[in-house]
Length: 174
View: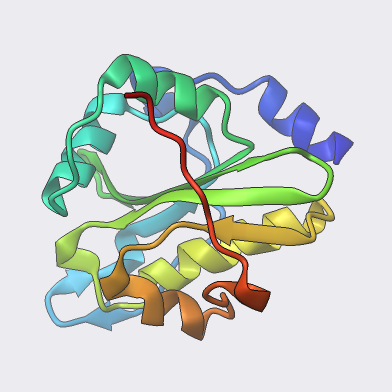
């Protein structure tokens, strides 16, 4: 656990990830007209908030105040992003994050893949990387919230809906 705490302690959430971009591995397949050899996995917390907003807009998510998104990213334990990179530019095409109590539990949030890149296995790549890092931190319970139309995706990754009859409960201000 100390490794990840130290690893992320020195990271910052800023306006651009260009300078802190770290290639973890190369996805080396070509599907249709999309060159996946230009898509890289990154675990930097330095995410361009405007690009993240554009990515979320591309899948129809409700806009969230950037100030609050910045706070959420700052308090995330792990952030995974997929970056399409070519000679002249970079573009955020996938994203997910997790929060944790750093002992037992973690929750995965904001799993999003740009529509042009959906169906290519990139969601699995992001999820496997998140789960791998959480398990390396000895997190034993990983939860997430999912829209009904993506439950089957998460089931294929080993997630169980309402295990042992457990139901999530929510409190909202009135």
